[in-house]
Amino acid sequence: SFLHDCIMTTTSTSTLPACKADHPSEAEVYHKPSIKFQIANLIAIVVPFLGLITAIILTWGVAFNWMYLGLMLGMYIATGLGITIGYHRLFTHRSFKAPRPVVYLLGVLGSMAVQGPVMEWVATHRKHHQHSDHDDDPHSPHTHGDSLWGVIRGAWHAHGGWMFDPPIRGLGRYVQDLRKDRLVRKINDQFLLWVIIGLLLPALLGGLLTMSWMGVLLGFLWGGLVRVFLVHHVTWSVNSVCHIWGQRPFRTSDESRNNLIVGVLAFGEGWHNNHHAFPTSAAHGLRWWQFDSSYLIIRLMGMIGLASDIRRPSPERVAAKDRRANPEAPPKLTAETKPNSKPKSEPSKHAV
Image 1 (cartoon, rainbow, N blue to C red):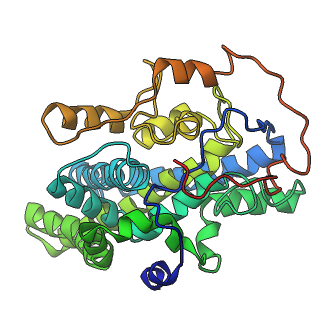
Image 2: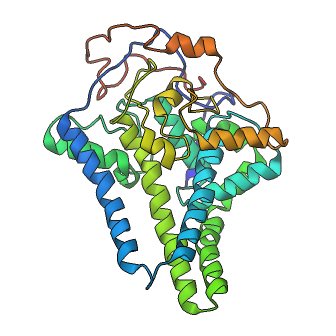
Image 3: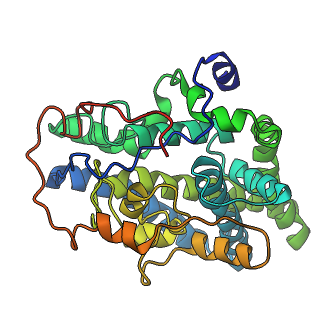
């Protein structure tokens, strides 16, 4: 099991989250994805959404209405924020602090998203930052070659195929800090319980609101199963779309990109190049026009005493990594710097 792997992994005593270090001297990698690569990814993203919209239209008034839409969106928002604010910005990057009841609630909502126990999710994501768009990245779209089959494999791998790979060994070293936290261990152990509750809750609400067994079934379908699909699909789009489509205003050693559509749908996670440039920032939208609903909620939590030590890069750090303010021609791709090769030197596994 993952927890057994955590316990058995021998590592240093550092408790800092293992995220890719912010090294200004790193060689910048710039590699525009090919048209066929972009098309393959676009098809993988758009077709499932079109299928869902078609299903909603065809079943409206029969097996879908405003009540079920409300259940689906309510559960989508709650569990999606459990991932973005809880699993990602709090547990993975420690971009703010919160009282223990809030930590527990965010962990519960993240668990209801059905994306894995909190420790496994955090460890995988920290490994992604450690090796972003290189061979050891768990879900990079850029490590399968430039052939048509390689492009298709890369697009599928980043968007969801990576979860069917053999279990990643040695993830325990990425979550030493979390293993020492009794509350986080409790959240991790209760994962299956909260998955079940997250599926049964909309079913119960659907039944109570309609006073029918059909309401139970449709509540489970739309607020449970379809909602899980939506949250998964949008989260996976951060892994795939935001490493293929969008802008790269900041110098990073990977292919992370800002994407407006994913930024809105994923509660601010789509400002992905910003995030990879400043991984411990609670704010991913760093410009006034980059809407980041997760950060707005974190700020509101701070105003009412439910969050503290909210981290955000200084204007000087932002300006120092801004490509427009510091234009530099990207280096030629080499065996050490191209995205489908391992980096020449690996950053410290405990760098933040």
